[in-house]
Image 1: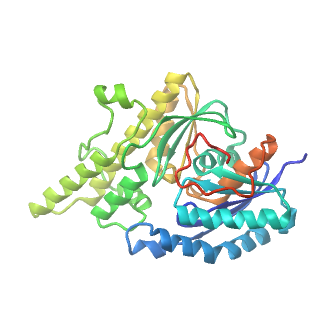
Image 2 (image 1 turned 90 degrees about the vertical axis):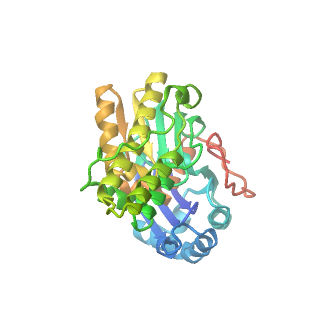
Length: 347
């Protein structure tokens, strides 16, 4: 069979993503974001996201096909994020994918959102090195995974035990009066601040913590430490140095993420690390990972920023891999699972 032409649908949060790939080649990646509708609430409102997906789905699919120069009946398969994510938002995507697959008579693949963040790197850097360590950092997840086969063999090594990295970025941005979503604004502010101005804590890195949570992440304490520092400045009537706080906070997050990813790779004797998820677009994280990994002889792969955030291309990429490796398609009674575990790559 020639390289499969796959349409992917992503609706796990506030972005309606439709991507079309042929094998490892990205043809189009269309995204309709509802982030502006959530900004005034300071976070994503599930009902608003679901309604936005309903309104954006058909126009986004139409745009994707037009830009790719294909007709819907040309696709070999339809892939969709089945979980994890917001339940209502996932349902819109899954129902749309079922309708397409049934109407076109094409196989349906309900895939894991987190595994898709790993698979998308193939669209930029070619086939994944297997095994590799994947670190996924986003608004809802901070995970370390051992990947031996992206379609079946994804094993968790560590995960978030409270606030994920992206969630901490959003909360600290709000403390500093920066817009939502916070990640890009903290990254921008940090460029003019000092990363050593304030010594914020590094969660779960003490010897005692490492015995129980060697590869797990916790950013709740860091977020609280930033809040207390800012409140103390405000009480004393001193101005808050936003750039320094942002840079010092960002340094603490990136330090923990990179340290644990490199430890995971070294412990497994694996020479390749892949970083994915929205926080992977952070410039300091990318630079620090490459710098420290190079010293250890470990290679780092990070997709370009546009492929790090939620998108349909990543779902299509994982779907194309499912087709290429002959995995059994999903049934048409495929459920949407808001808490789908990473060990379930294909439903």
